[in-house]
Length: 185
Length: 435
Image (cartoon, chains in turn orange, yellow):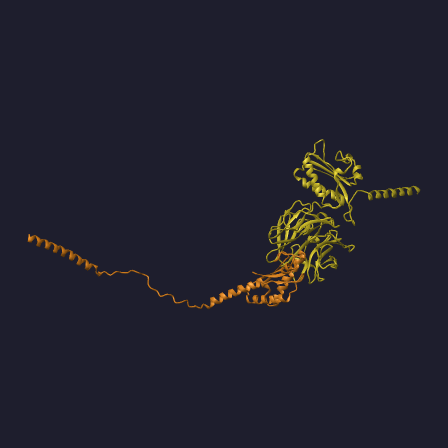
C-alpha cells in the first residue's frame, strides 16, 4: 500500500517536474531572442527647409514691377479722356495737363501705340460732327507730337456722334460726350 | 397785193388763235411755280370689260394701292364717288361713257377709271372740264404684280400732270440703326421695295447715288479708321477704299462726270477733294484751314454747295465750279449744315439749328429768299431733293425716334416713309431718272 502511495507521489512529482520544466522553458523563450527585428523604413529624416529666405531675383522682380507700372500707365493712358466745348476743338488747360501726362507715359513706354478717337455730342449734324470729331482727335494728336511722341505710334479716327458715353439729352451728358479717347493697341 | 395782205392777216390770225388754244390747254400742275393749287380727283368704280365681271377683291385692292400712292402727292385730294349727285357718273371706262357734268359740279378736276378683263386691266385718267384723257395704260396678268402696276400707273400719271417723272420709281437710300451698327438700305418713297445694301458692321453713313443710279457711295467707320465704300448694283458687290484717302472719309457724293467728291483730311484741315476714276484725290475743290464738308451738286455740275466752318460757325456756301468763286449762302443763325442743291440748281435745302432743334430751310438762290419747310418737334435733319426737285425727303425725331419723312419744297405736311424697324437717317434720293 505504502509502495502505491510513493508511486503516487513520484508520479505527482514527475508531473510537477514536467510541468515545471515546461514552464521554465516557456520562460526562456519569452526573453528577447537573438533575432534582430529589422525596421525597414526608407524615409530618411530630412531637416525642415530653412525659413523662406527672400531669395532676391532682382531682374524678375524689376520686370514684375515694371509690368505693373506699365499696366497702370496704360490704364492711365486709356481711362482718362479729354473734353471739349460745344462746336470746338480747342484744347482746354486741363486737357493740356492730361496730355502732358499721356506724353510722359508714351515716351516711357515706346512700344505702346494708341488710336485717338474723336467724339461729339448729339446736337450737331452728322457729317459736320464727323469732321469736328476728327479735329478733336487731331488736336490731341498734334499736341502729343509737340510733346515728343512719335507720330507713327498714333492714329486718329472720328466717330462723330455715334458713340456717346452718356445717352442722355442734357448738358451734363453732352459735356461728357464731347471728348477724345485714347485706345491702346 | 391786197390779196397777199389779206392772206397774211389770215395767217397771223390762225397762228395767234392756235397759240391761245395751246395756252388755255390741258390741265397741268406747275410744281415749280411760286405756289400750287389743290387738284381734286375721283377714282370711279371699276368696270368689267367685254362683258366680264369685275373681280371685286382684286379691284378693291388695286384701288387702295392707287389711293395710297396718290396720297403722297400733296396737291391731290381724293374725292369719294358718294359725294356726287346721282352716284357713279360712268357706264364704262372710256371718255365717251362718262358723264362729266356731276363731276364738274362737284369741282372734281380729274377722274380715273379702271376696267377689268380677268387678270388684264386698263387704267385711264381724264380731265373733267375738257374730257381730255391725261393718261391711259393697259397691263396684262396683274395678279402678283398689283403694287408694281399701281406704282407704274401713278408714275405715268404724275409725269403727265407735272412734266416730271420718277417719283414712284426712284429709290431712296438711307441709314438704318441696327443693334450695334448702322447699315445702308434702299426703299421706294411710297414705302415699297425695302432692300438691304450693307451688312458690314460698324457705322455705314452718308449714302449717295451715282448720277446713273447704279452705284451708292458711303462712309464706313471701322474701329481705327474711315473707309470709302462703293456699292455697285450691277455686280451687287461692295468695294472698300482707304489707300491714299487718309484716316477720314466724310460725305462722299457723285458730282460732275460721275466723279466722287469727298471731304478728306490730308494736311490737317478737312477739305473737299474731287477723286479720279481710281478713287485717288485729284484736286481740292474747297480749301480753308477750317472744316469743309457735305458737298452737293446740281445736275449740270456747275454749282456746288457745301458746309464750311470758315466764318467761325458752320454755314452753307456756294461755289461756282468754273471760276472757283465761293459765296456764303446762309447769313442767319449759328449752325447751318447739310445742304442739298436741287437738280436744277435753283434751291438749297439745308438744316438750320434753332433753339428748339434742327429745322429744314429752303433758300432760293435766284431771289435770295428763305423759307422754313419743317416745324418739328424734335430735330428735322438731312434734307434731300427728289429727282423732280419738288419733293424733299428728310429725317426727323418728331415721333421720339428718327424716321424718314416726305415733304415738298413748298413745305407740305410731312408724310412718314415706312422703313421698317429701327431708326432711319440720311435719306439720299436716286435722281437718275431726271438726269
